[in-house]
Length: 199
Image (cartoon, rainbow, N blue to C red; front, top):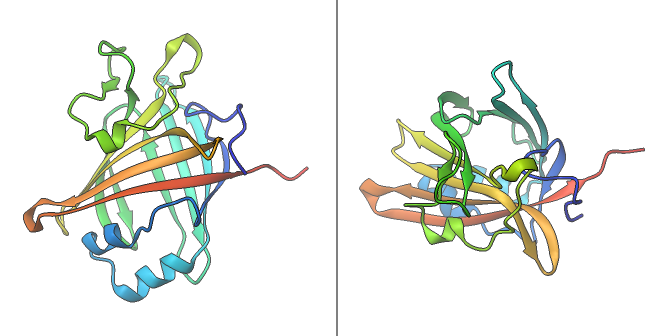
């Protein structure tokens, strides 16, 4: 289902399922990331579910943990984000070791709060087509994630937020995956459907 109004970039808590019909084909990005054909095929058939937990630490920084599961024999993984721009090293069975930096992103304000990124320098694919939502006090309405694979040489720049698709509001992640040495690029929009908790 589409996302309820209570779900925002500041409250992603809950269960989200990747929509096969609304999302772009991920195969071009997986090719750049060096994923073998048989695994890419399994991903194309799998139902991918993320269970998100969003909290704050003692310093007030937002912590976001997403436990991902998939059908078709694909091993589940948990990705963790500390939304303060600091680097986290994440080990993935599928993608290997990655260096991840996650920040708040404000696409409407050229002079945001300290530590908040603006859209300056970002590709238009990442910055356009969003609902411009914010939390209390005008807090930023998006998340920016930068991922780098030291071993495979690819990078992934991501913007997360909410967008209207066919008149309905969905949680969306946009990716640009690149391997500059091989002059490769893939643009991907991934759309998530919200799964309400069982009564």
